[in-house]
Length: 451
Figure (spheres, rainbow, N blue to C red):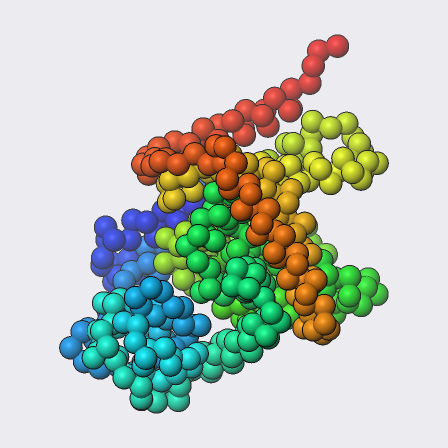
């Protein structure tokens, strides 16, 4: 409930653009809640009200000085992506501590852009930047904060690893998938390749998420010091996961996964009980307080809805089996986990995918039986290739086979249902139906048959 109250506050923030009034109301609500400690029910309402006002407060728009008529210093903060007529880059504006995505007209000068280049730019907020509106120069990198320098350092190392991929003899599609799946760089993905993965329901493999970090967590857990040094192994895993998150660019889904795994690991070290749903909600609260605009990010919405659906539905699916049946039958357990997670995640994200992309992939279950084992092999293989470069041909072979298989599946009859455009109200109603169905099943589980 606190997470829902916070989200509601963020959504309603534009209706109340008076930050001082919200601050006063927030402080008064905290004091009132404190004095009502003897009345638990009323205090609970007060706590939810505090989260609601906090959401309104953090979502208040910042006052920025317009840069439309002045030249600003910027730093190229992503791999330049070449499109038919433009070069797409993310520019960091050090003086304003924010990033903007810009489309620069493609010419000989824009092709020379590199990660970390200093630029002087006119009208960076316009999106499209003409050739005459930018030039090399300035001292943007010298004005970066310490955290921004750390991020840029990791991006430099990612650039080095991407260049190693290019020198291993990969074709364009193999390189694009390998770069997206292991290092979070999707700049090389073509429209046709994105469409192939979208039609088959495999787009989630190209976006680093909990699946990828979960695979890495299991690998690191097996390689660390074991139960005798459990706390030390968990600290090492947390640091390694966050290093990987910085390496991949700190996307929303990666930050969500790293935060949740970190909280889970810290609770494990302390020996306290941890509810996965509570951990997920706490992660959402932390991320939204730090970055309230993440609520409108498609990756944030898909990531949390998929994980929440999995956490809610998997215990229900498991209840259909006799006690200890899955423990005794490893093959059945593997198939159940694959089918259950795929179906639960699809239930969670289907309304959002239909709303944002107008599509439903009918072969998502078959696709996951293919792409999840392949993703595991590719992630482990990428780590091995860093140490043993001679294994690169085998890794590229797996990526090539995956691309060919998905290309074949995308040509199958009725591979996807297109033209779906539900409204926001319809999406909300679908999730309400889902929750009603879920709580109905939970109620039926508690009813024992009369004997």
